[in-house]
Length: 51
Image 1 (cartoon, rainbow, N blue to C red):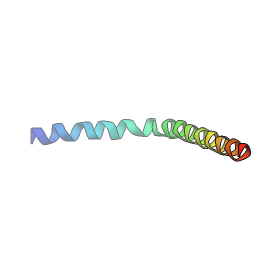
Image 2 (image 1 turned 180 degrees about the vertical axis):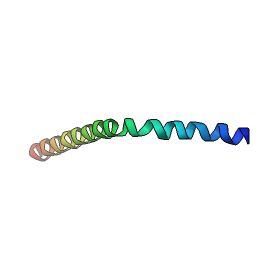
Image 3 (image 1 turned 135 degrees about the horizontal axis):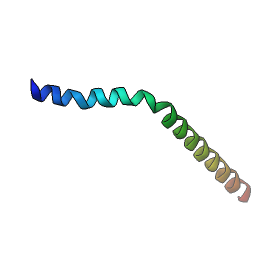
């Protein structure tokens, strides 16, 4: 039983700690994704104009 409880503890700790950050992390990830998409679109436009 002790081994099972030890294995279960880290999961509960991460689960309890997670709700505090995900909004920030997802927000940052969304910003990075939008920037990446904009850069790709700009590059595609430049290439299409050049050709």
